[in-house]
Length: 182
Length: 270
Image (cartoon, rainbow over all chains, first blue to last red):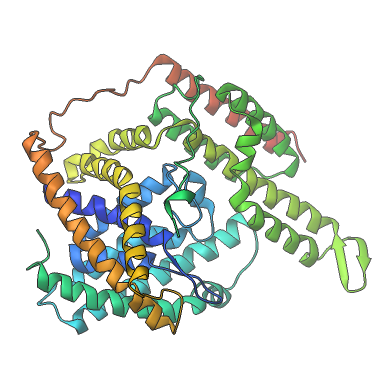
């Protein structure tokens, strides 16, 4: 599983972009919109499974080592926050998105399928960790249905729109830069 | 609209203390020991012992206590929330009641226990990032993961990615800021219209940003190749990590203290 220098640098810069994506807040009533998920989709769709996944690992480890790249800061204590499952799911989400997107010639339908599978994975892992966190760290019983209500429902529409936007942009980027992978 | 301003760089607080000088690998191991031990605590009263340990570690780190306590701020709301749920919704022996609200002894005990456990977990974990530079931690992680290189895990590459990302986050934020201002000057609206419209308004920001990223990757790879970078194999370091006797003493001492605290928790308390 060798990584070329060019791939290493793209992954590093996408890790940086993920941090930028977490900082940009689009003002919107009720749920503020960030471009975080958008960059995660794009990392998979454009960089492919391996490089996309490592860009997200680098981002996650950077945040855990205390650089304030998460939307609420950074540091090891973030592992205990109820929303850590989402952060943890991003490398896997980028991997699955890349896996599906690079499974054949790039089309909008394939990209959409890739990013929606990634989204599903994020929700699954995010909700799982949220309910584990509330049950074991906070010591409060939360049913899976309630966890989905808190963790998934308010975000589903914006996230699907981000998946669509990322699919469109990845298609254009891959068309402009040849095969995408350097 | 300047994003760069809210980026105070990291949690690390420079100081000349015994804890700052420990090997990052030792500190990672210590935090793992502490966190697993706190999860094994059963009685609320034993947190007094853990509080004393926290004070001892704080004095060794030569950090002001106020600063350490401040790191718990992000989870404070969660701690208060879970505590209040336990206080008001646990059934048991009532202590006092007001209308439909009944506070029970069991509820108070559970509230104190979960809130304290969460706070101590966060406070002990934060010592790792308060006393270690992010790049030292990246080095430590690279060394800890290096046995996995045999199975194809790119430990060196991952640490390198972290270093480069850290270097370029301020640059990328600056560029984003500049592009956003340029688009605003050309009549872009980022805070008007439907969700889809707002998202679409960001495409003219993102496309130049991606072009900059690809350009930077190109430039950097040329620069690094010109300086004969060829991966982690055989690469030497400016500051090689060294495991000293003090690291062994710190790890063993801490393990001993936590073991004693846990034994006290299991045997001395009812």
